[in-house]
Amino acid sequence: MQTMDSFNFAGKKAFVRVDFNVPLDENFHITDDTRIRAAVPTLKKILRDGGSVIIGSHLGRPKGATDKFSLRHILPRVSELLGVDVQFAGDCIGSETEAKAAALRPGEALLLENLRFYAEEEGKPRGLAENATEEETASAKKAVKETQKEFTKKLASYADVYVNDAFGTAHRAHASTALIADHFDAEHKLFGYLLQNEITAVEKVMKDTERPFTAIMGGSKVSSKIEIIRNLLDKVDNLILAGGMTYTFAKAFGGNIGDSIVENDKLDLARELVEMAKEKGVNLVLATDAKIADSFSNDAKTNFASVKEIPNGWEGLDIGPESEKLFTEVIRNSKTILWNGPVGVFEFDNFDRGSRAVSDAIVEATRKGAFSLVGGGDSVACVNKFGHADQVSYVSTGGGALLEMIEGKVLPGIKAIRGY
Image (cartoon, rainbow, N blue to C red):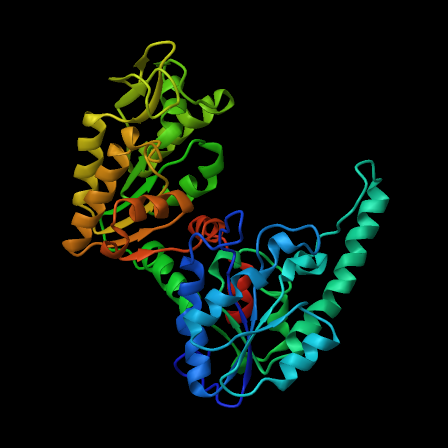
């Protein structure tokens, strides 16, 4: 399989699927350009070789063409980072766009308008009435799938080679992330630097594991992480479950959790996971104490309590000192670390101590030679807030894609290029 370093893009036009789904403020100014900067090495390599690039991306979740989600808003920043005057196509398909792509010369770049302005990108029908019959729904789905084929073919026709550098959307079998690859032979489709780095980092954690292997899973709901937890129980030595899901486990074993967040319909599941960990010999680490508050506010009154003895009218918003010591001891002695999800409401400075302690411990373990992968939006926000992003082994740009890889799923965007 070709790689970015082995492929010579001289004289070639490359369709590069990137993830420029960046946050914009009310004046359409980019508030975080991390995803754009992440794709720059791939785009610059192609241009440096003497190739030209057709850049495709989505922005937001539009239900049709709208200025709010137009990629023209990010064009100046893309041009600045690439160091070239990037051209813009006001549509991602059509005769005008075809002409612009055809006229590209070596060293030139063209940014296409938001791919999701077309329902064909996602392959999902739009505009169905709420009371649409099953027959009408099935007919609409069939129709968009048929037009999706032509849409994909048009995108592929612009280029000689396809490069996927959008890990954040690799778990979607969309036109530009998976289906387009069928129009290129094995020698003319490849991963960009970012996507290859993401794959390498996740596979190092999940397949090339140095032990002890510790995973820290945060988040508010057990239900949203159930498949990940089950898959990890076959791979890790230590599994730290924290965040809001702490209180579902505490209640499942008879605890009084006050007003803490809980999934009452998942209490049996929590007990099942504890038993599963015992059967598999996994050290399941749960918080024993919490920093509690009398309201969900940074300015709330606070105290500390056992996670099983939280008074009514109070809720757990962070781990307590005992849990902090318990978690960090496990992390510091690990050789492979996966962190997905904070252990408290880190957005409030008054409740970020637990997540900061976890982040500090991961940094310390990394300094001692551990491989650490941090992924998932909130975990990434944590390491950025604490200034640790450059002190861990790898920070993933993917949310859903990362989680699905951890679950053991084969991502469509990856399979489309390497076949598995």
